[in-house]
Image (cartoon, rainbow, N blue to C red; front, side, top):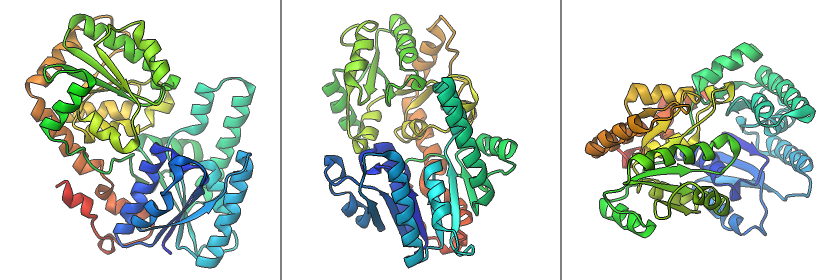
Length: 404
């Protein structure tokens, strides 16, 4: 076995985790590596049915731990299971992407004399995020604990990945070690939706082909800034009567409650869709909202939403807060960086008119950037560094050719 990924969560029922864990593992498997995934699996959960078969079809061997009623016990059970797999199958590398999985990997590889290399994937500034969005003594204690654990992990891991160069610099400043590679959140491919399919989907949503469709995709957690998104769209729609808003979220009732008090009926649609349907729905839009506050958590982040928007051919509307995305949008000319304090929507409407006059050009520009940067095969060299495999030994995934 080349790689054992230890994810002590129920990822079978979490669309985001499936796209960001299973997809890269499937790519690595298709590239010639023997890959396995250890996670929590609740066989009684409807969303978990067929998950093992899905993994096998992707060339991934599954190791599963039954959930208990206690999250901490789940972590312990996963660590014990991982130790057993390491002892029996001797994987060359063991991978984790959050602190409890990281601790489990350290436990599982004790006594292996370095024969199993520990690869840790930093997905963001987690301790800082806990402080920003938690508050109080409990949050401060948890943030301190996570910082201590991350420091140990940064010291003992064989290789580190970060999702942005800014995060790598943050790790160097905080823990004394930069990441060995930078692999962002990626998409596994574009929507490949034809114009007639897009028109049919727009019609089903109550929108016409001549409407400008703005999209918000995600949960309604405070840090996603849904209220601010609605406020901004309200300003836009007051100036442009062709503006429409599509909200893709599992929180339908809450979204409709917020929208109903701000946006006129007929100017918006709310849907809850499966993860595998998201990209097609996104491709029926024209613009994607990605607003974030201006803080260290967002400065070092790379939201998966950006990869999904770009892979679907959307023009991006973002803020300075998510600085990595703002930089890309400016350098690639693929969107608009807006000031949330601005009270005049005319500039963004003028920009949106320009985009619509050259819609195909913007779409092709987005696809081009996605194909060069935001598909997993784009990072074949970095994967080689993480797992100690020569670039030439990794085969290119057929997905890359399919979207060439």
